[in-house]
Amino acid sequence: MMTMFMPGHGHHVPQPLAMTGGALPDSAYPDAQLAVSPTPLMGTVSDTQAIGRKRHASGDVVERMVERRQKRMIKNRESAARSRPRKQAYTHELKNKVLRLEAEIERLQRMREAEKVLPSVPPPQPKFKLRRTSSAPL
Image (cartoon, rainbow, N blue to C red; front, side, top):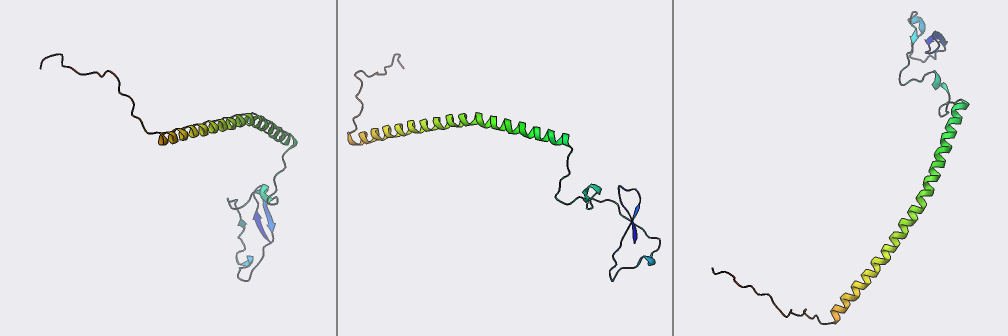
C-alpha cells in the first residue's frame, strides 16, 4: 500500500500499488510518499462520474431551461410564420418578372424577324436643313 494525496479530501488516502517486474519496492525508499497534484490532464473529484454523463441540475434550473427552450421554440414558429408569406410574395413577384421578360423577348425577336423580312428603308430627310453661314467677316 502506498499513501497518495487526494485533492478535495485534504489528507493522504492509502492506495494499492501494482508492482511490475522492473519497479523498485517501497523498502528501497522508505520515506518516499507519492503526492499527486491536479494537472490539466488529470480529472478533478467531480470528474469521477462516468464519462459521457451529464451532471443532474436542480429542479429550478431545469424548469428555467425548459421554459427558455419553449419560448425559443414559440419565437421560432412565429418567425417562420412571418417568413412563409414573405417567401411566397417574393416567389410570385419573380414568376411575374419571368413572364414579363419572356414576353419582352418574344416581342423583340418578332421585331428582329420583321426587320430581316422588310428591306431597310432609311429614314426620310427633313424638308429644311439648317445651314451654317458666316455672320461676320474673317
